[in-house]
Image (tube, rainbow, N blue to C red; front, side, top):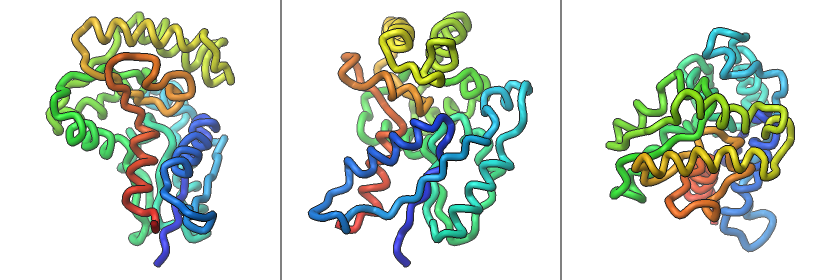
Length: 235
């Protein structure tokens, strides 16, 4: 059976589009027909994942499962969710037996451990929901990597402000305003002996990339796109 990749986006919408673009970018092709078949469902009805984890909002599982069901109905057999925080609820997702779920956190941990065995301490940029849940440090620890998070005030005033604030990425702002806030945190994490930075929010790469820092920048979207093209591209 030919592979059809389904992306569940909408969390936020640009993150899903970015993943789609990265898959196209990394696919080795000679012609249009060599590209992977991809269906993107931008589900804007998925409740906020951070609010759900903090017990301040509706659980997102129902809507994510609706997206899974829709994608499976149109022939998708590989599904990836373009939201790191949503992976906290991964054990509640319902897939058909033939569907392969690509857990972007698990493959990112494995990627860092394999490609950068010298790195043992990584600073994390993520939503407060992801930070509070603690599921990412556990996965990385199993690969021999310590995850370091910003202090409480930096997490609130800089990271969350850069993502959710009035001048944040979720408002469509991709200027120097959110970038400077995140880079302030990057510097502090580096000063705290972090050997790399993990973009554990799929919207962070909309304003940050490797050229912004002199230590490795691990973008889970980028890692996911490379994984999909290396394992499922036809050429």
